Length: 222
Image (cartoon, rainbow, N blue to C red):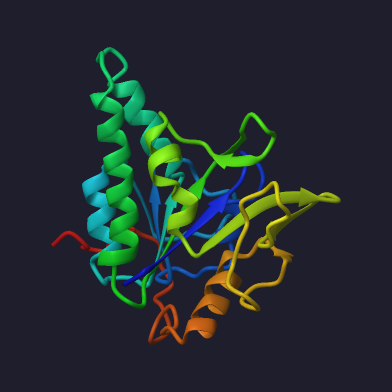
């Protein structure tokens, strides 16, 4: 089984910037909206909005770390694509597609694979943080946050982008005891290293990665 981690933050809170310390060959970025990375380094990335491609990548064993940036837009894009359809069956389809993505990242993915799902938050009626989704099925009958062992909040504190991993009663942040600092620099490679050390997982790569940029799929669907 793989590990799925949700990285939750508003636009500009540092989600994509947190990838800056990865080297080419260490992580595959599945770029849903095709946005350029906010730094100069070239990382292996492919633009895709296709669930099948994304699931094939993260279950392929070709890499030990994948990032879906931004996974929440998979729901939004499908919702807009089916906007003229009537009835509630389309919302069931959207929920099932996303649930199958979570299943691929956890149950089906190889043991050494960590998948990071970047998503956006919003507030519920009580002012508590929730994950932005489409429809009520994922919120009320599934609960995305409950399916992952680690949920990281991206915040800006005193002008600095940080990761928050401790729940304060209003946010969704969580991590296993003593795995991650309560507040830390927004460095996803450091998070990945600490997760692997905590659970005795293999490192990102077995040898030095080639200094190149390219497609994140890396022939994953061959």
